Image 1 (cartoon, rainbow, N blue to C red):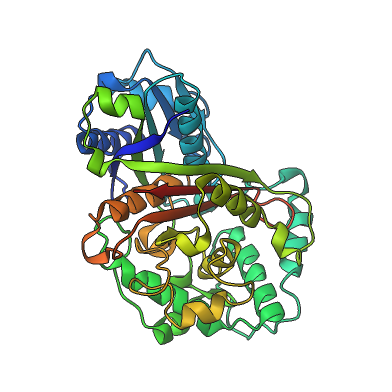
Image 2: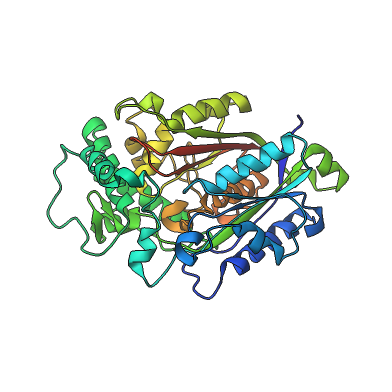
Length: 412
């Protein structure tokens, strides 16, 4: 089938971008990716547009990609719209890779754009309400929250302000991990402090403030054991990646030194399992498939971007990815092994907690960061001698885990 390469990447800053609409965000990200690649709009042979909440927020339920891309001259080629909750962008990336591998084209654009922030907080947080089975939402929420039983919740550790229902679910995941493995709130805070430190050096990050572990613990609560700096914010933004076949790289005379090879792109849907069957977690299964396809193992990975919608998510996912045994994610994080300069740097971008989480863009934001790392172009957050990179991006909830997990492995 031949190798597939990421040859151009671009993104906007993430944040509360009230004065910029979806079309403008798309234009900025695509223009940056084209400039980075040296390609032109006319070279695009297929486009995959990722967005999760424009229908909910603006009423644009259909043909979002065709509308956003037509104005920048991308027309007359296949355009596919992709929604897969918070894993939408990495799912679009997977489809683009397979489009090229199938021989349907030589150059593909993947772009995600999202406008989530609103002064109407009920509407804004309501964007998450359909990321699980809406026909049984109350029952599912109760079942998931019950996973955290057995851990005492201190008084005054639940916010009185509105927040996403998914924070209750993540808190339940955290309490289960605490009960089962002895993970501490301080270890979870160490993840958040590390990611906020990394974000200081990322010009695209929504928040660029450093926190100590004690400051994270003392911050305003969301719901125990989570405090505000441990949780991803509501974000707007866009990101784009241009992919090429080997033949297209040669045909367009692109810079091979900056072309990053896609070693594996895997989508793993969740399955029925009990909460303590950790080896059956969808990310764990997807990671095994991805490592096998790439011909590498977790010990070969130089740098990773993982889905830390809350800090405990990073602890869970580094275990699923095989960077440490189950139950060791907390101690590994507290020891600093996941910092830049540590054994396995994780979320050098600052992660979702700091960089932001425009949910239809997040997976591509991870890939943009990892391409920069593998090229050696990440500046003050550069991981030394980065050769193999992994992105993990999850979406929705079904059963006791994410509904879908996407694993991407890139290499020089």
